[in-house]
Image (cartoon, rainbow, N blue to C red):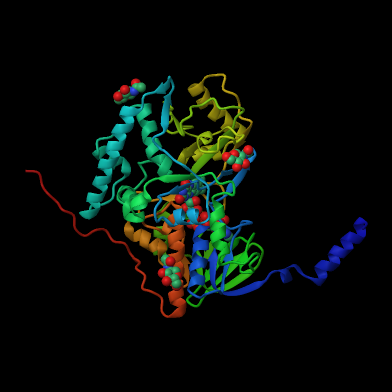
Length: 494
Ligand SMILES: Cc1cc2nc3c(=O)[nH]c(=O)nc-3n(C[C@H](O)[C@H](O)[C@H](O)COP(=O)(O)OP(=O)(O)OC[C@H]3O[C@@H](n4cnc5c(N)ncnc54)[C@H](O)[C@@H]3O)c2cc1C
Ligand SMILES: *[C@@H]1O[C@H](CO)[C@@H](O)[C@H](O)[C@H]1NC(C)=O
Ligand SMILES: *[C@@H]1O[C@H](CO)[C@@H](O)[C@H](O)[C@H]1NC(C)=O
Ligand SMILES: *[C@@H]1O[C@H](CO)[C@@H](O)[C@H](O)[C@H]1NC(C)=O
């Protein structure tokens, strides 16, 4: 076809089928906004409860959300979540077993530490931090019981007798704290974070054989088990799943919800379950009309979205230690290019890669995300050459996920900050107008940050919506105004 007649036929087509005609209006009972782990869990529960009239609206080309893998150096690496954290009856562990996910043993104690002078004996510092951490946990639990206010984990550690005096101490602390919470002890809540440790992994939550983590190495990706779980209730190309569709605005009143999208499709729903990360909501990537009430914003905007950045590099050969983990204690920059993981210690021996990757968090993540990959590589190589000498070869490949600047995530997972009260968190989760509901990792008081948090809250919120549909909405606690405590114990010096 010559260019002229092509132009004419396009013009004719546009005249015959004006663009607006392509946009559709869908009607559904329950719109699930986002298609991550919480959304999958939610539609399973809706189905179980006899409601098939739902839709999932997801911006990406597939379900799974932060469970994503990435082709790298000829294998798949996990861009997002990587560990089953907490075994036993943890629903993620159960899914992992059910679908035969390939995982490797994880041993956090299999770690060596380097500082600017080379390998250091970390035993004394490591043990002393471990003991302080235990005392801090007891302190957190006892403060919770007696109803004392929250303090930061930094103050908790101080009170437990720990203060980092050396670069090694800082690295030890980073390894056990920031590398898990995604943020430092200064901003993290003692009452809600630390006192939950037992609940999060321990026997209280998942039974006797709950202890430990498994590291996912399955080449189908961590996402595999969630996609399989979704398949049990969704058909292939299920018309109820709108992929590649970004929600731009949520309009709501007391009678229902209208969802606007970037493809101009409109979804009219009786109820909506919002599963976007708190980072996305805080960044106002999705507009709410009318504006969400103050009590809701106060809870939602006070929570933290942490960023955890894995910088993957593949090398011509392994020049590093055989341990699972290697820490570098930068004397001037706590945590920077510090937490290294040796993928060779997890993958089958015949895997052809030599991947050594480093994780940075918080401000270092923002810094790294603003750099070119080549600059990130140069920074990482500086640390490696201090640890392993000047002859260390350059990597053949590098991959730097950028979760914080990604408009669909705006970070990796939430962290409970000092200043967010229990009441704020209840407000985060509470529905608005009996029409807008929330689910996702951040809405779990015990398991925020973890896959199990996403899984539990998805099912729970769906159950609430089912009750609204079938009989009467359950009563939700929320706090229209959160007031200062009226009484403080006051003593005078004598
Ligand atoms: C780097 C990293 C490491 C982690 N490590 C672990 C780990 O080892 N173990 C563990 O248990 N957990 C880990 N997590 C946390 C875990 O991945 C999350 O808790 C969980 O995946 C969150 O699920 P969700 O359904 O709450 O949210 P999401 O997965 O974020 O689902 C929300 C969905 O909404 C979509 N979306 C966003 N905006 C829009 C829009 N405007 N329109 C339409 N769709 C939109 C997104 O694409 C996404 O699919 C990690 C996360 C990251 C990023
Ligand atoms: C899910 O749905 C079923 C059926 O409605 C319900 O009995 C169950 O308790 C629900 N909740 C969770 C958290 O699984
Ligand atoms: C490391 O330090 C610990 C405690 O200070 C000591 O018991 C141990 O022998 C040291 N190990 C080595 C290999 O020097
Ligand atoms: C590695 O070995 C396993 C069996 O131990 C085998 O199943 C697999 O195919 C091998 N992979 C490669 C890349 O050779």
